[in-house]
Image 1 (tube, rainbow, N blue to C red):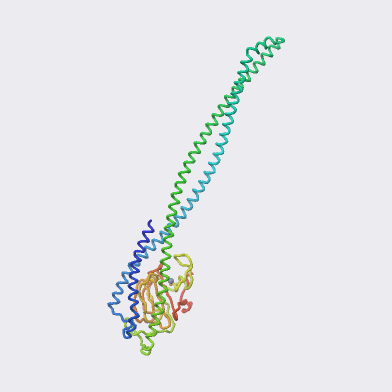
Image 2 (cartoon, rainbow, N blue to C red):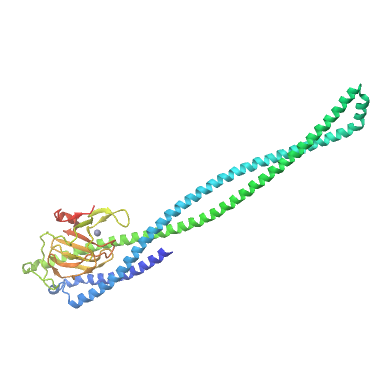
Length: 425
Ligand SMILES: [Zn+2]
């Protein structure tokens, strides 16, 4: 089955990706240890960044392969569902034909039974008339020697004799008529038999046609069944992917919360040292923490709101952790507020994503085509953190944007004037 091959390919790529993700997580998990070293918090060298970027480029290629496979799988699923619909129609039509032919067979069987009764009746008549004729001949023979004598010599007059002779003629004519009727009955029986045989032959042709039809139907049904099974397993696998992605997204949120807390705790004593930082990635973190955000990309179209929404692939309602800003593939993604980059990496669900800590809040930018900042880097409001893409579990170019205030996700739209954005629904 082609779909299972596709799936195997998809999961092959995915396994590699999970390994890469684990590496990324290992790097990530080493971070808390560096908090102990207060002087070098989030300090990264250019070589580290380059190395990371190479890894990310490699992951991006693998990720694009996976995305193409998933897309092909989706298309295949859609075409299989169409095929199944057509086969279902065919199956129901053929079943209708079978039912109709079965009705006809029943009708023919009734006709055959009628004809058989007719034949039996005619055969009985034939036998009866043969018996009757035999009796009559026997009687004539018996009477022959005696009767002719009594007729000739028993006649009281010539006219009496003539009438007696007429009577004999009538008997002879009657016997002849019976004989002719016997022949007719035999011929009728033979015709009935011939008709019956023709009907039977027709019926047999119909039966064999029906059997061929049934065999074809059985083949089609088994084909449909295996397609349905394949589709069902595809759907299950895909659902597992989405569930994994959701779990991963929740884990990411927990990491964001813990990182942001650590950063806050660590920053507290050095608060008075805050000064405007540059974007070269090595300056002391400074937090805006003022809760004012700028719109993070050029596109103004919200294609999917925060909260419960109809999932574009699964077709049922699931929680949506942010807003989707549609279109504008390749456009810069801008930091909504100044802050420190606490996450800049790959995720199966978010693709290439960045999280910036702003003090009391964090912002998340997902599905980007590339990453433009590194962990520990300080960014000013409006700095480019990446570019709009469709990486991770995404069906097209869009920016998935989240805001968390005091460790809880909020509806990002509550932070913007309604003139800032356009709802695409
Ligand atoms: Zn989204």
